[in-house]
Image: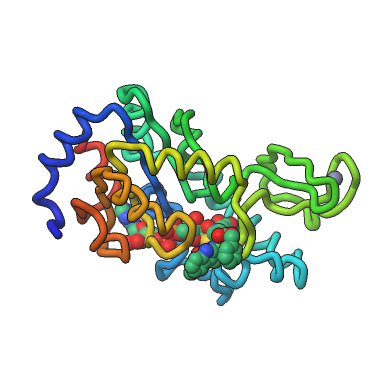
Length: 241
Ligand code: BJW
Ligand code: ZN
């Protein structure tokens, strides 16, 4: 697989495409200074993200999990979208049928101006009641521990999809439809190991799409895609438009 020689082919495909779908992961926000999950900075007080982002961890120690989210909210609050986020807003404007699927919870895509998107793992700036299920937008940093529902006074949790939890069925349906019906799928900055997003590359290939990966390193998606471009998202993605 080519790691850079495919750029002209990708540009040509994108320029002629009427249906483009994009899948993004933590790598696109790394260029804004948001730590990735599985990089060296993915640790917090010696806890791995995988051990904190579960319903079991929250049931056991909601304070610990909320402290982690407060730390991340504080960090993300200072970050702004980069050239790759902005390029995807431009792509949304140019392409007739466009859909952006992000695994990121940082809200940088909507902040940049993306509108046709599914945040399939939720959003760190939303909270949800563990009792009545109401979702509220909330940008307070830090949140008081433990935060309580304004409607019923029960415990709030982050509006985020943790390991072992199901994705919102509407988000999933819309994403699978967008992946299965696009002409070009761009996969940007994801390690390609968390399902169901990890299956989108093969799904798109099976449906006949031209699939492009943009990542610093090879991933399990790399052997599946048509072109794998090595490099930083903030440099490579704007160069494709
Ligand atoms: C750059 C860069 C730069 C760096 N430029 N690139 C089928 C098979 C096996 C297991 C399962 C399965 N189906 C479901 C599961 C279980 C589980 C799962 O997938 N486990 C795997 C680990 C094996 N999935 C689930 O539980 C999902 N639920 C589900 O499917 O429900 C039904 C079901 C349940 C149980 C069993 C079976 C079915 C839900 C998954 C929710 C994931 N949520 C998280 C946590 C959110 C917490 C939070 O943010 O607060 O979402 S996990 C974490 O990983 C986060 C991310 O969105 C997600 C993906 O990570 P991502 O974005 O790929 O980041 P990294 O850090 O891994 O990679 C960064 C990449 O960028 C790297 O490749 C770098 O090289 C690159 N990079 N800088 C370009 N500048
Ligand atoms: Zn409530």
